[in-house]
Length: 343
Image (tube, rainbow, N blue to C red; front, side, top):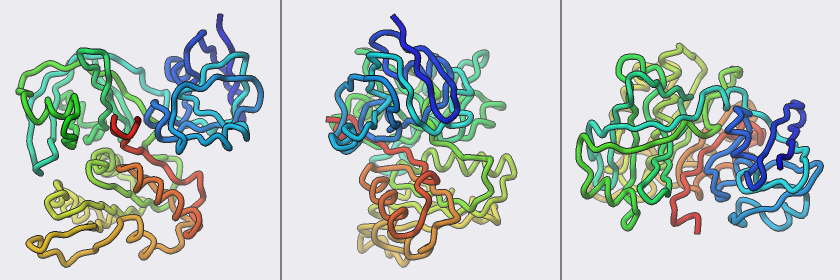
């Protein structure tokens, strides 16, 4: 039993198997619907149902409220069709461009630039290239079948010299995967991953200036986007705001400073919310999204790429649109929902 989903305004259609979600079918067939977590937690995949019926699986009310559901909105990541559907969704050009693959990878190094951050480098098979957009993520498939998602921190062109990816992993004490990374993981260990996933990447058909907004390890996909812009010679003005608690949490501060020195179109503004006395911090303090609003009260001509803690992403989206005239469709985000956030 299959149902047909038609996407408006593009008119594209694709088939969904019985008991398959709309999003899973779209990814399988290379249709570029927007999405983030795939777990009903972030709301990035929210679309309007124009015709047909769906059943929603478990999801968070902040991602889709009962009032929104009543008004005809659906989360494609946890909506299973009961009939043929017509949905209204902005398709993401290039989201389905690269095949989603499963592959083994080998741990080549584990560095800890901050007490609770590991930079993991993984070697990929030389004969089976992982193609992705800067900003996308992969999922580790753990032994019990559960999955953990991490964004690539290196741009795709780096695969040409040495197939491998860099991931920035924050330790979540009690976390099934991160306890292993910070405890017993050894170099040469083999892991299994699948990817690429996600619709968080630079929209290269625009020439608008860019705000890159990161909190914590949300810096990883932003770093990949900066490397990609440098490699491609993209000259759009860009400003990177990186918010962390204390100085130690700006775990690649020097990297960001050097990138801003090399790239005449890039500015870097680090912001600390709780600097420690011995940080001797003379830079910006407070909430990172508020620093953006102080510097750029009019965002009407900008694109914003925000990545990190859900509370930061949600606050930025709400305030930039309501108070800084950012067009809602120019806010692109990847909300780092942990397993704890999903329950």
